[in-house]
Image (cartoon, rainbow, N blue to C red; front, side, top):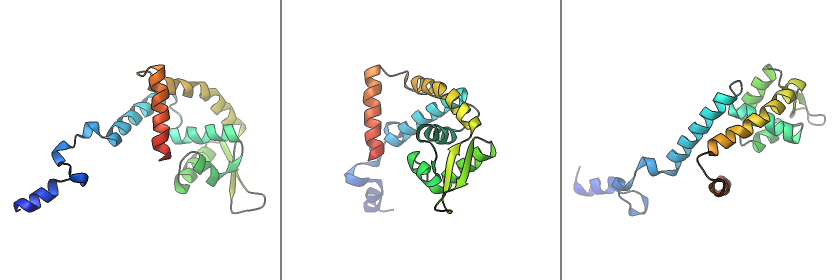
Length: 155
């Protein structure tokens, strides 16, 4: 390649050099590593549910029966993902999905008795997962981190 083409390929947006890029300092990489750590802690303590399954159960415990679509929105899952999560929870007898009274196309999802017992038993454990995940931080750092992370999540 000629020198001009080389220079063009090595420049990143805003005129920054590709040499300035260090993966270990990139927000996405750090977030992914932190998430992997959190998922490992979760799996060690709550091994019989995935984090999306637990999120769905915890939200249903919090809000009560709701449409599958609304539940997906509340737990930040797209329609296909929440459908798969609900299907797996239904197969385990942890949730019940019934047609909506007025709109038969909509499914209303609720906890089964078994699902309610399970999630209520796991909520204290889930709090400990969060505490362990955040253990390297001081109380003040934790508050700042969660505030800033929420700000990033809201965009």
